[in-house]
Image 1 (cartoon, helix red, strand yellow):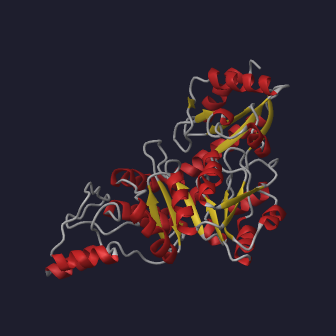
Image 2: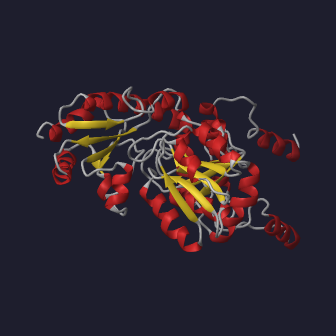
Image 3: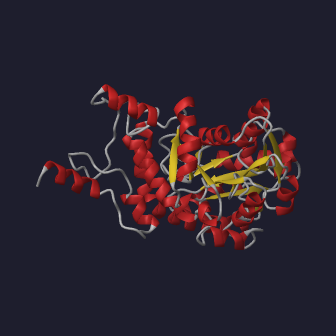
Length: 412
């Protein structure tokens, strides 16, 4: 076998057959292995790449070909992008340093002064601040509407509307939007629809197949799955990624590090198994909480009592995801907050932290953490009360999770 034949055989390993299922794509999609033939994708810790000659260097830098500098491309990062794009059914993906930097990239790539954005008012607090405060400084206007009221989205449209933005389910109240209906609405107005798919991941939900144009991920959450690194990504058509988003990354540098890319790349291999197991456990916990006398309400799409239960089951592969929220009973906001704090502080197994998507269950108080920078009026408008507790269910035994919650709930 000649060197050329050997190289062709090596590259062929990266060319997978058509029609593979997402679980297989999550394990097999990557760049071709190096000349050493490693079966686990390699970690390329390098900031620069040696070029064969000046002419080749000039062409590659001008056309963003191959690898020249790790701010614009790295083999490990490229493998992560290829794998996530395949799982989402996207033409391409671009990786970023965090989930919020992915949303920053989205806005920088698609919006300019004078443009208008319509956004669910139920999205993550930092997303609200990024659109309303930071981009408001540069002349981008944002209208916030009910996640679930299509009429509000329609009424908010203007001739200058360029983008609709929703996350589904929302953080922390798990409101579910109709992705296909919002896509039709956006396209009819000449706008694009972006869906934050962090809570479901492509293991449960694929927004592009329902008409969305761009998918956002905080890879810090379920894509990693073990709370180790920060990461983000946008998935979209090859044209959008190549012509709109990648040039912004090249200039602004919200680049994902190779090490973090490698960690999340390996996390994707177990994503489907984790999401199914954690979703099943979360449904059990949600049902237990719904029957508890110290709990006023449970927010979880997997429950039949959830207002968008049927829609969630249709969009999310029949599973509710691994995040729920619930209201601890309290006659006043002060009493509700005291009750929520007591439940949280009584836990001995759950982690009190602001992350989610970990194999370790995490409990938090949204009004003072993830949504703590919003005004009280903004929190009330989205339904986030002082008694609200968010629980991201991990992989512990479900009885140990409910026993831990009972320590506090039983004393209320």
